[in-house]
Each structure stands twice: as C-alpha cells, then as structure tokens.
Length: 282
Ligand SMILES: NC(=O)c1ccc[n+]([C@@H]2O[C@H](COP(=O)([O-])OP(=O)(O)OC[C@H]3O[C@@H](n4cnc5c(N)ncnc54)[C@H](OP(=O)(O)O)[C@@H]3O)[C@@H](O)[C@H]2O)c1
Image (cartoon, rainbow, N blue to C red):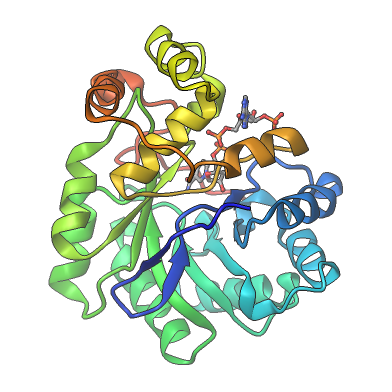
C-alpha cells in the first residue's frame, strides 16, 4: 500500500497530502464510497456543509472501526452562514451532523466579496474562535484570491493554514499558489483532474503511455510534485485505488514542464470565479 506523505501546516498540525473528495456524491451513496476509500487506504476526507453528506461521512468513519484520530476530516462553512452568529450555529451543526467533537480542518468555502458587504474578515475572526476552543484543529479558507488573503493578513492575527482553490493542468492558478507559498499557506487543489476534462489531453495520454500509468495518475502525480494537497473524487472503487497509487513513480522535469505548459489561464477555469461568485443558498 502507498505511503502518503504528510504536510505540516503553519499551526504545526499535519495533513495527508492525498485525500478523498466527496463533492457530488449523493448522501445515499456516501457511506459506501467513503467506506471503500478508507478500505483503499485513504485517511483524509474532504467534505462540506454544501455537499449535503456530512452525516454520511461521519457514519462511514465510525463504521470503519478506525480510530477517529487516524482520519483527517475537513468540512466547510456554507455561503449562507458568513455572519458570526450564523457561522457559530453552522459549525455546531457540522459537528453534530458529522457526529464528531472536532474537525481537523474547517474552511470558509467562498469569500463572497460582493455580498455581506464583502465582510469575510468577521467570518474569519469567528473561525478563529473554533480554532481557539479546539473544535477545529486547524482553520483555513477556500477560493480566496490574493486580495482576500491580504485583507485577512492586514486585519486579523491568524494566517490561514490552507487555501483550497481550483488547480489542474488547464488552470494552474500559479499566482495564487505562489502567494500562498510565500506566506505559509498550503494550496489544496480542487477538481485536480478537472472532473475528467484533462484526461484525454494528448500530452497527458502520451506521458501516461510512456510511463505505463493512467492519465489520472500522471495528473495527480504532477500535483503531488508541485507540493499541493489533492483529494480526487470517485464513486468507482477501481478508480479510488488507481488514484491512490501515486508514490511508486516520478515525473521527469521535461514531462512535468509539458503538463504545466497546458495552462490556459482564466479560460481553463471550470468553476466559478471567486471575485464574482455570489451564490447564497436560501
Ligand atoms: N472548495 C471548493 O469550492 C471545491 C470545489 C470543487 C471541488 N472541491 C473538492 O475537490 C474534490 C475533487 O474535485 P471534483 O470532485 O470536483 O473533481 P475531480 O476529483 O477532479 O474529478 C472527479 C470526476 O472524475 C472522475 N474520475 C475520478 N478518478 C478517475 C480516474 N482515475 N479516471 C477517470 N475518471 C476519474 C469521477 O468519476 P466517478 O466518480 O464516476 O468515478 C468524477 O466524475 C471534491 O470532491 C471536493 O472535495 C472543492
């Protein structure tokens, strides 16, 4: 079985570099998917209130028979709950839905700079409370642009441990990643295989054929060598196993460089732009 490296965060906690994402896994399929992922060796699960499957993630963790302390679980504050009292209530609900007395990592899911008067600073200060009372071992953000990170830096005293952002070969997002690297914020790359869109790319398939690896393994290995955290999603057990086998090969620098050169800038983005995304569920 692969040994997944740990990454040390700026608060001293460690996180497995490879995990399992559960976005778009229906609640009724989540216990089965997370159970299979834990069987395959994953020890890091990335969920969110928005995904509607926190209860089932908690259920699968308990059913696994593994110690809670051996599994790293992340969840995220939904966009409806940025105001401090709402955030406190939402975090309580996340813990009770998961059935845990702590999460390893809690994130602000989106900055929403055009709603709540752009006040993600008071939301972040509320996140600091969750960290200080020990119920979120680490805290971080998701989809924050440089401007948003700079505002937190100017107005609060806690540097986010991670920034979870869209990153894959068609959208390398290197400017935001570089800012994180300079400031001790680890990048978590969401949609690491662009929900499958990069897997037919001729550059990727040529490198995969040469190395006798699959396109998904080549792309995920590229992320690992960049130092980012990844958590590919799959409901297919054979793919869960495939995506976990990343540590018995290495991309040489020319192949690595060719994959990085597939970047299409903003045109490569598949999800919303955080500067304008303003979706608040009712
Ligand atoms: N913070 C945010 O705003 C945000 C946004 C998006 C995602 N995320 C996180 O990032 C995680 C991963 O991103 P994602 O779910 O959007 O997309 P992804 O992991 O890039 O891709 C998932 C898709 O690729 C397929 N797939 C997985 N492994 C494969 C393989 N080896 N070969 C071929 N196809 C494969 C899956 O199909 P099957 O399931 O049918 O096998 C699924 O359709 C999410 O689950 C979530 O935890 C966060």
